Amino acid sequence: MNQTKTYSEQELVGLLQERNEKAFGYLYDNYSGAIFGIINAIVTDKDIANDVLQNVFINIWRKIDSYDTSKGRLFTWMLNIARNASIDEIRSKGFRNSQQNQSLNENVDVAGASSGPSVEDVGLKKVLSTLKSEWRVLVDMSYFQGYTHEEISKILNIPLGTVKTRIRSALSQLRTMIQP
Amino acid sequence: MNVQEYISSGIVESYVLGLTSEEERREFENMCNQHPEVLAARNAFEIALENQAMQNAITPSAEVKNKLFNEINATAKVISIADQAPVRKINWFKYAAAASVILLAGSLYFNFSLTEKNKKLNGEYNNTVAELNSIKKDVQVLTDKSEIKMASLKGTAVSPQSYTTVYWDSTSHDVYLLINNLPKPPSDKQYQLWAFLDGKPIDVGFISNEYFIKQNSLLVKAKSVQKVQAFAISLEKIGREDTSVPAGEVYVYGGL
Image (cartoon, rainbow over all chains, first blue to last red; front, top):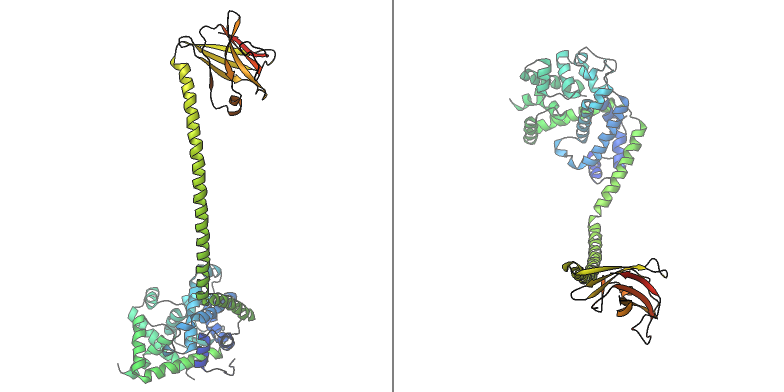
């Protein structure tokens, strides 16, 4: 999937902010797969995931001026747009209705998230599955389902401080696992 | 907590994955500015995350790219129109100026025509009031006095549809004629009203042909007559020699 880069990140951002369609085409060709991977980890319906992907890239095109290089890499910025859009989607009424008959959906089933690795787990989710379960469920709810620490504390009946500490521990663990 | 402990606390990952609170986020950004090692840790995790995501990329439907670029081109057109705002503004002012001139001209014309219309209406109103006053006066003549006697003049065989009414004031001896229905006379003839006393006709005057054209009064005032038993109207040639006796055909006749 890795393509030969023809732009440095700085050049790419500059061109995107000038609304250069060629640069945007490059951005899409280069990153849509990775972004789609994260969308699919949250939104399990393929058709809906395609719609979310389209909206994510429209937002990238429209909001590129608000991207601040000092706050992180371009991909990180795009990844956060994708995660937020995906969580908005799974929390929307329409999505919930469409998922009503799919009881095996891991993403809306907290218990399912803690029941060990699934064959469909890819990417970050796969990494997540190697975490110990008490951490995994917290990261899953927090990152993939968008629950706040307060909500998780209430749902799982765990003190807020413990939720925060465990998520932090889980995430620092995650770093060592995905480090090249 | 020293910087190393801070870095390994999980804050780096929380920040990059967008899981920090506002306060934690600001604090982390300050730490990045102050401590290059925090920035380096952030950068390292970002690259690791990106690589990880790249390795687990899923190819989306090719349709998405087409839809995406259609949408962006549609948006780009909107933006390019908006970019021409200064030009559009000048045009707008031009049109606005032209529109206001047209409106002004229209308004002036409208005012003018209103004034004209007003003048015309005013004239019509005055005429109507004058007519009404004259009719009121006529009616007053008939209603104010109890001595008024009335004669209904019915159509003769010459003109059975004709019908007029004569009012005679027995004290002042004034005669008023109400023409209910009389054919319009030819231009060389005019009607003449007669009073009859003991079978003899008395001329009480001609009815002006103007009455049949303008028809702006209810009653026609005729000459006074001291005593009368009946009235008649005949159609006479204009300019005949002896107007003291009727010569033409009698149209209506009736007794008091």
